[in-house]
Image 1 (cartoon, rainbow, N blue to C red):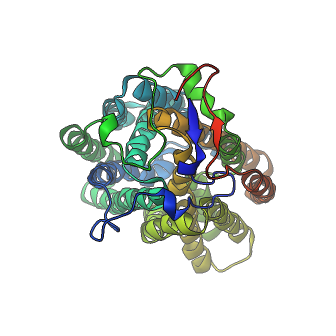
Image 2 (spheres, one colour; image 1 turned 135 degrees about the vertical axis):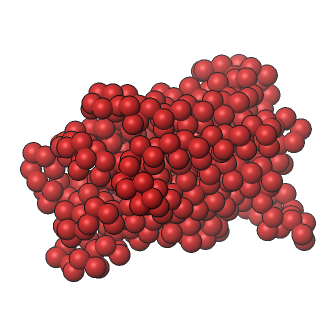
Length: 443
């Protein structure tokens, strides 16, 4: 099996594929997004309302309500990210092997929905950790198959825009989640259990939309230009891992891991901001709202900019925005400036990294291996973030929030230099091929 780089984006440098390699768009379809992308966007929108309702109140519920220490919360936040590692790989590989991307994604959505009802019953740290781990495992199962469906519906040169549109719709749900959570708390006199039950209802509706309106693609309907054709009818595990033999793809995975390890979770940054500014706990859920608003406004422009100017450059620029957020928390700025700057910089960070990373990696893998390939990238990033969140929580508890912030900023600056070198070295020259499968495989 071979990957034709004439149909691949320049993974290492992030430059877009030449226009000649993309299928010529029609006059009416030049700016149109595939229906499956829009449908999956609706599913993600509704599901993210559910997820962000919980995310908006969980830090306050755990730290201020149940009395967890910053170290304990940091460990849970790390588990929140790390639990997705194995499930991402499993979900991507199973979806590729049986060509059931929609089915695997639906299973993941169902697990996460059920966990919303279990949170109120979880009273201790271990029980809460177990529920959060199961919820994140469900997210891990669904993410790679869902992103594979998006990438197989879009030409290689337009991957950034396709993922940008999906992420914008996804973030619209994140924008709605915190206000819905606040409304439920206001109506029920701060009954957190009611937030979790309402969150389940939204998640169940999103699952229903997926089951009714999304179908698994067949080889003949995969968009031309979305990637090299798949030859093998059955995908083995060694075939899925073989994409790491493409130097550009391996560098993207390593860059995602390094940068993820120096990425502090949103919840930890919001808690740190709350400590610096004495922000009222009742206004805490508005911080994710600001982040989601900026992400919503910039997701499509960032994805389009990645297609035009280089996805690697936009990906690195997003992490520069995160570094600026770390520095803002270390600077003696007025409270209002910090409260505005942190959600804004986090939104810019996600706009430049979330969908852009998938668009950077996806064109290297054939559609039949797309789920597993994207899962490898996502696993590296999630595993790194798990270490980063746990490490920041431990540093905060042992050395104080200021020292923890200095260490995080210094680590991210070094990781940015290393990632820039990784993404700048070596290219996949258009018109050449590189072996990406085991010896003896055909394609």
